[in-house]
Image 1 (tube, rainbow over the protein chains, first blue to last red):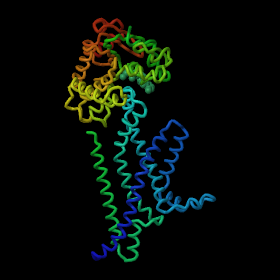
Image 2: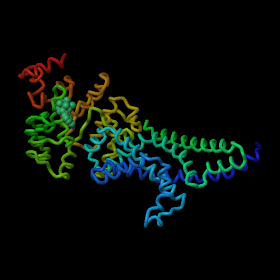
Image 3: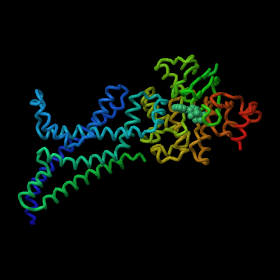
Image 4: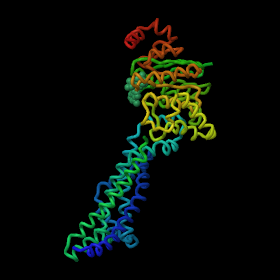
Length: 219
Length: 248
Ligand SMILES: Nc1ncnc2c1ncn2[C@@H]1O[C@H](COP(=O)(O)OP(=O)(O)O)[C@@H](O)[C@H]1O
Ligand SMILES: [Mg+2]
């Protein structure tokens, strides 16, 4: 194993890693707000909305992400009549799948955060004359996000690793390039390189969240 | 004219009657201590004054405005205006943990926008000085002792200039050595003629500071009177038993 060989496989693998990072960013930026909307919908007093949101969360958490990805990439186009309009770019389809799935997980995390807030916080807000919106935005949400932060961190690390599922829908990402190199060069070195790249990504992410947790410790 | 008139309050949970025909008045500048065994309905009564509990029947009139009259509540906007006349201090402080002491004080006035930010700031520093916590203005509640937290909670309630201050066992969650600092702040308020209703187990405070004591048991007002009357010469057997037990 030479240094030159490492360099030669590193280049395509880092390109693959870019795809991983891009998917991660898109998924996290969209699924967190969407998850939060789901949390509020699931807790809504308007029953139909609440039932739909709860059903959605149940289905997305109760079935494999891989199944959902395959369904969006290969299943949607097979639906009669409308199917031909549902042929999505693989990467777009994968983003959609990750967003829809992770939103459900984040919704559940935020719901836990909401439940952990003492009812005295609502009572104090009411007695101080805050309206519902002010109570939500100034009192409840900041605490909810703080409580949810460690779980969000965990889920984000899982998301980084789950991006490897892109492999199954043939979007060229990190793992894809590693596998290609392993087959071509009869060496397992690319697997180690891929592992190290994943480790670096999860490490950086963990550090960011640790910093956030410290920054919002409220002590 | 009394500042609070409470007549025939009734509330039940299922077939448990928590409040049965509660009737009493509070005059301006009164300090009313409400005592009684736990489960007697003291909190429910107090909380119904600020609409944290809904009563089933009866009348609550604050400064001439009916919050509820013979069981019929006022419109939401009127309820809000009536509640604004009262501040409430809770047993467990209920400070906002994600805000500093100063931010806890200033949040509500800033949201209500009735005063300029400069006025709000000035009042929060005055009140912090009054409760002796000027040096903790930028601390988060997690870093305060129980007694300090409760003093901040009192200051937070005072920020809105209430005419009446309600306390629900303000010292019950505190270590015994920390109750004094909170009771002292309340004594100061009494000397400044703040109208207060205080649910408390602190018989010393009730004796010294209150000008009227109400003894509640089992959802009823069993006896009420001046501290001198009630503590030295209770008429009702239930009052006697309760006092004997709690003065031990
Ligand atoms: N939400 C509720 N549901 C059912 N019972 C309640 C509820 N809140 C209070 N109670 C009951 O009402 C009674 C009076 O409670 P409370 O007003 O808290 O008494 P106190 O403050 O004097 O200890 C108690 O028996 C309590 O168990
Ligand atoms: Mg109580």
